[in-house]
Length: 217
Image (cartoon, rainbow, N blue to C red; front, side, top):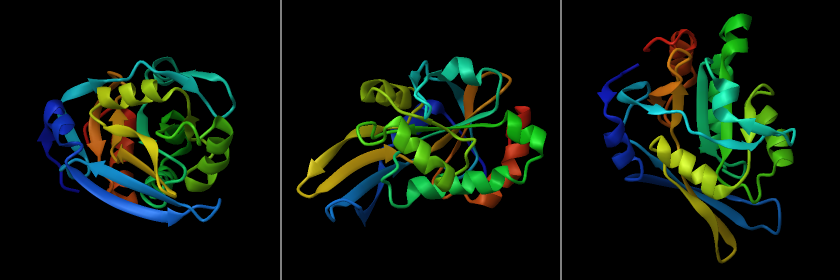
């Protein structure tokens, strides 16, 4: 895997420059759901010179209970991704790649690793919807969070990830969200490694053991 260091500020500045679009047919009324996904220029496994603070965020998990991100993941290796269940490719592929890689870890390592999926489309992604989608797209152990969009957007922005509210354009629902996965250290609780949408299961397999230990990949 190719790696390089990058300033957090530079990552935030480039997060919305490169866009890709995808579409699919919705299960309701034949409407299409279009996702414009922004990604940074970084390669998989970019170690940040200036780590991000973990977002101060309290949302609702798939069981309908409040989930305090900082409190629940304190001292634990954590991967955070912002996406939505109607995304036709990037979001389910990202969750699947992480799930495949996670299975290569020992049971003890799997128990430590926290994977958190925060919806960028809370109007449609209710806790119940996330609870149905996550086990198939990723793994039953993954945490799904929904809640106030403004809070979600602010949390994403705080770690250099841009998202816009979903909007209707004719018969389509259009959304834009950063496709990065941010890894937080169990030692410092700060986001110090970022992964782009091209990160493969093998890339994650190589890095996850080190991330679990709080090391730089």
